[in-house]
Image (cartoon, rainbow, N blue to C red; front, side, top):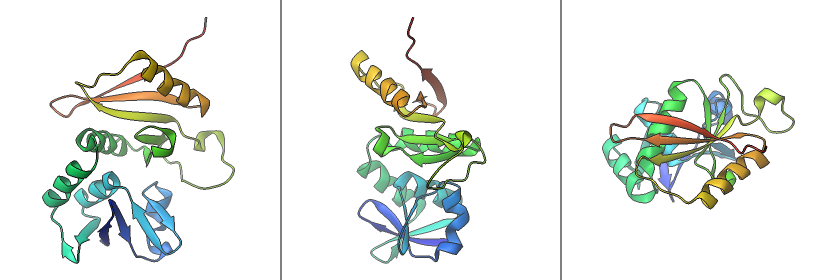
Amino acid sequence: MFQGELIEHRITVFEKLDEINDLLESGYGKWLEDRWELALVEAMYLMSREKLEITKNKKKMTKEDFLKYCKKNERNFHARLIVYTDLRERGFVVKTGFKFGCDFRVYDRGVKIKKGPKAAHEHTKWVVHAIPEEFTCSFPELSRAVRLAQNIRTEMIWAVVDSESDVTYYSIKRITP
């Protein structure tokens, strides 16, 4: 089990690169010179799988305390965690999608995350927005999301989480006659 520390809304793990390499290749977190950093949703998932313990100010956090912290400090955390967990349980590689204006980037099953040139199957398969069922948006917002996905040659998926925490996935595409 890895030991992580909550620092400024991220989980930092000070382990040797070779000890966490398998998790990095599976898309968990990112390596920054001397440490591994995880987003809150990634850390919560690993914590719930008993692969990660988290401390805050040198005090061990329970899963319940960490979940409460995440919900308080990250917008729409519940829906994001449900979708992240569902995609991971289906075998997909899931990365955060902040720089693409979405919640997650999803890669096909078995893809190893790497930098540099990639084969076609190693590119992002979908960009995913995780939203609660009561979410509303305008058509221009929807159009921007779809165009962004098309600009990076991927497909836009809206993952709608209902009140029972079930997820329904909707693919939205731009069709040109």
